[in-house]
Length: 587
Image 1 (cartoon, rainbow, N blue to C red):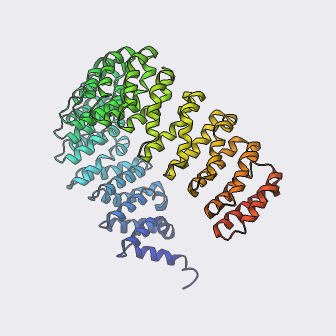
Image 2 (cartoon, helix red, strand yellow):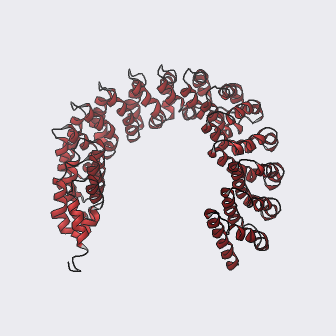
Image 3 (cartoon, rainbow, N blue to C red):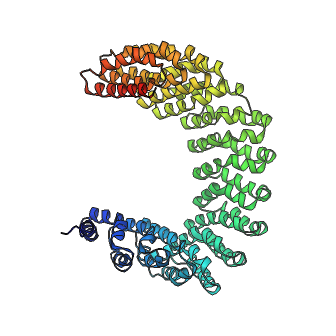
């Protein structure tokens, strides 16, 4: 083989692999289509590679998915935007396959290519693709077509635009629910490209049909359309057309549609404006908060603070607060959990007096909830309440809840409460913390689960940053260093980790006097894992300590460890020694 042919040899292999029986080889080759295209050149890619891909579309879904993805970024390899239309046939074929994720990726790639094409090319090449897919015999083609109308429509001349609007209207009345679903979910995108005059007439009549569809899966997608269309319409049209639909949907016989309304409520309120929301949507929202399906109540409870902001304190206290009280003792723990995650945000909306009188009893009852997630959600948003109510009123109830969560049998719950300790510390103040929570922070250092011990060391560092080195010297360092004599080596390792995190906060003097001697001592430990962790900690301390201390104390210890019988201890000791030497050289 001549040297000229050599670079082409692997390309020939890749092209052969496109036809190989082994799926992994075909997949590998498809993922390297850009390499093949570069080697073939733009003209051969257009005339040979792309037609070959158009024909080979009866492959495994995984291969087709990779092909759909690659073709979306293929414009530079076929000669730029003026030749982009050659990529449409293989993607059009992929839009008709049965596997949904392949179709979705093909639609995404078509949109990407269409967005770069010239207007004249869109009319000549892209619009015919949309029309062919929309008229496809198999429903998959019609589903895919719904996702590309918004690309084709703006560039089309008026007559063609009218035709596209008519076709979209027909898709919204298709016999297959899957097609109507796709039309409903893409209506918002299509509507943004349609002129205002047709928006009120044709698009709104399409929307009305979808809102009355007999399939709940279509109606629930129309709910999303409410918010999208509401933002496009004039305020008065929005109130006339969108508002009645929202109110009807909030009473829909399908809980999935009601769930969707509850989930999208804030966006819907933004669409119709605060004034009309107060006037028309309060009763709909109250209905959703009292829905007989837990899923709907969960979605509605999660929006309670946002909705109260729109209503203002007076209406919130009058209409929403009674529902919130009911939800705080709901039979579903998930409803209570959803409420607990947002209820703290209501305090600033209602103001101090109403918060203390009305919300405080609800907070306290949720803090005593039997379900840990509910208690955690309340504690995680504590700062929002503290600004309004003040911590004193909460602290008596907080402590039992924190202690219970800190000792929960599920380690993930313990981990979550550790994450909130610095927040609690900053809110509760140093006095309360020392009395009540200090012992818990030390207890976690000896937890059976590594993730808890690891989080506990980070927690100590954050507390030292919050309350300052002097406080840490008095309340953290002595208790931490005491634990270095624990008989179990895993707990001794945790203390070394804590020392390496605390040292930068404590500064050179305290590190040298208090922390370093403990680390040096640990280098005589009988367990190799401890010894190589000593080497790691010493490496971390080099940048904090004075050069003279590194020379007199750290280096001799590392030299001793570098001669240890254990290979890992020697490795980490040598790494630390290299860091020492680099520091000496740089200074």
